[in-house]
Image (cartoon, rainbow, N blue to C red; front, side, top):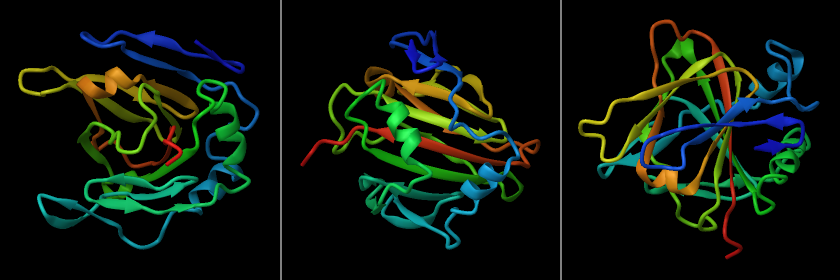
Length: 202
């Protein structure tokens, strides 16, 4: 799979279309530990954020913000800000894969604070059916863990989400596999992920 100058290869996952992964080769991709990455990190929200889990408000162990389109999940809505100039080239590039991509969700993970995201399948509420979900990873390398659903008896399949790498999850893979970014003692760096989705017009 080619998107602009980037070539993604298929990673097989039993019972699904698999994943497409590979390093970005685009001019807008910031260098690791660069001033551009620092500027992106400076956009990290300051205040703690919460979601509903089992009917209770729970602080999430990371920071996040939606751009372009609101994202509804876990009983709450991440209200979208307008897409800023620094994210526009990212979306334009991603639209070469799926022209209907129009919403971005950024997650900022500070490994020194133990920040992470637990196993989940991305909410498809409001998404264009059959469209893929793309995640771009910047900063510290973190484990991106896939597990078949339901998880009982399913072994975890780990890949390393390194700086400047893309992961594309096809619609049917998201239906049968959960994914997570767990935290390990070795994870002390900072990571930004940009997840890109296509939302229905209504």
